[in-house]
Image (tube, rainbow, N blue to C red):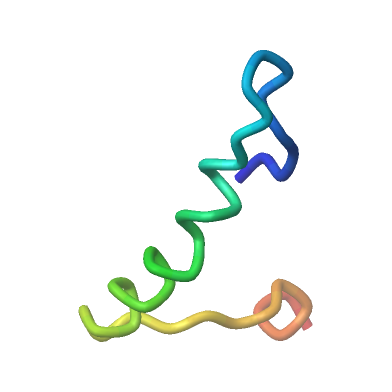
Length: 40
C-alpha cells in the first residue's frame, strides 16, 4: 500500500482504508506474520 497523499486534493485513501482491510482479513480467518519468520 502506498502511504502518502494525493497531490491534487491531499486525501490519503490507502492509509485510511488499511485498518478496515486488516480487520476484514482477520475476520475471514487469515493472519499476518513477519517475512523473517517464514524464511528463517
